Image (cartoon, rainbow, N blue to C red; front, side):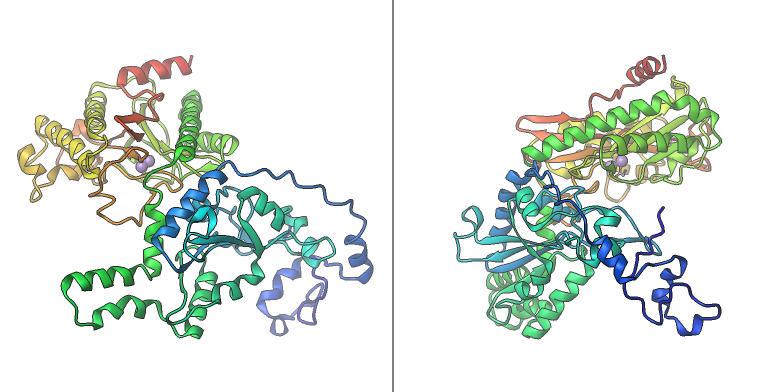
Amino acid sequence: MTDATPVTPEPTSETPDQAPENAGAGQDLASRGSNRSQRPDSDAFKAFITSGWAPRAELDVEPLPAAPYTVARRAALSARFPGARLVVPAGPLKTRSNDTDYRFRPHSAFAHLTGYGTDQVPDAVLVLHPVEPGTGDGGCDHHAVLYVRPLAARDTEEFYADSRYGEFWVGARPSLDDVTTATGVEARHVDELRDALAKDVGPGGVTLLVVAGADEAVEALVEAIRAEAGVDETEAAGSAQDQELTDAEWLARAEAAYRRTDAALVEAVSELRLVKDAHEVEQMREAVAATIAGFEEVVRNLGRAVEHRRGERVIETTFDAHARLEGNTVGYETIAAAGEHATTLHWIRNDGVVRTGELVLLDAGVEVDSLYTADVTRTLPVDGEFTEVQRRVYQAVLDAADAAFAVAVPGARFRDVHAAAMEVIAARLEEWGLLPVSAAESLSAEGQQHRRWMVHGTSHHLGLDVHDCAQARRELYLDGVLEPGMVFTIEPGLYFKADDLAVPEEYRGIGVRIEDDVLVTADGNENLSAALPRRPEDVEAWMARLRG
Ligand code: GLY
Ligand code: MN
Ligand code: MN
């Protein structure tokens, strides 16, 4: 990697071109990154590097494919927060180590509400400003503005000297016009953010709410503005409690007060994604298709995995290379777990050997450029054929998944999907003589012994985050009713650890998970990942075909 010490036009006595020996005591630590390279700072250099450039070619900016859909998404958020100013940060660049950053990925709420995916808009902030009811964007009660750090001109130091943001270092960022062309949202310089957020904030005035967890600096700015205006988010939430009210009045006031908290905004941007729109479903289809192709690549490469001392890494890197080539990256760290490692649910160290005769569990998903991710698991026999006991365990998990699919229809509750899978798992464990109680007792709330071998849930919502909608209320998630447009996983498993003395030896060291991505439709559901074989005989035939 190129030394990220930027040319620093105006070094001070604390930042010499080359630190003299024993200069430690006189040089502040922050400037020591500059000790490792020569930094031109002559006027001649500055004049030369900032001149002589052809006019900047117009960046070929097109409207983002998601842009037409984001208007309705923002309107839905607007309707939940009349009169409040809503702040949705993209988030900053995040340090990986010392002065190197991770690749930028915007916060999922920002991506959802702007349509931005992998594009370079770190530090951008979407603000929904309250306006006269009905006079906002698309007739809603808010007007959206994107505050961004636009592309710097070539006569600026940033152009050539800023290793985090400068065009010489990380490429050209969009201009304000580019942002508006891409998103359809008014764009303004981020330097205007503070005044824009503070306008009319105060007791009886505009309420300022921020999506917490995306950008600490923006949260601190919001806190400072509230403090200056004499408002306190937590006071607003508690004010309803001080009054003498009937229960119903108290609840209504408490609800209204809660709508004035950052927590309510975080909850809302999460719940907004419970039902996917047509564009999101299309993106999920693309993510799943790319993921299936990645699984095929892995099967083609299994021979190499068996030969390598860290065969799990062969599997991981085969899938991850595919994800980088065909999408943005992986939606979460790939789990490539051979043999007993499959009994560790999130095995991501992936440094083990891959042995013939064993199973290998691959849990992986491609995140496409729009940032939607698949989340798929297959458990494969390394040499292409299941043994009898592997097949027995595999079939039990598959039957549990099929039972879950059968109930994952509109009108059912999310929790019913898990319950259906657990009935099958408990019944099989009873049949095999592994449960210390009957399946019925185990399925009761006081029992649950079967969960020893499947401690995770059967399903989670899926979308921009692999565990999407995670801040939704329980009544809309676990206790929620399934609706067309919801996308979630069905992923039962059975995991018998190598040292599990509660099971006969033949089961020990076997871990199986089968995970598919399901779309609830008007009259049932669609298995989005159905093109990846699930039945043991289909898995064997598919592997044989791919391995020639
Ligand atoms: N890969 C994480 C999960 O399946 O939830
Ligand atoms: Mn999952
Ligand atoms: Mn998974």
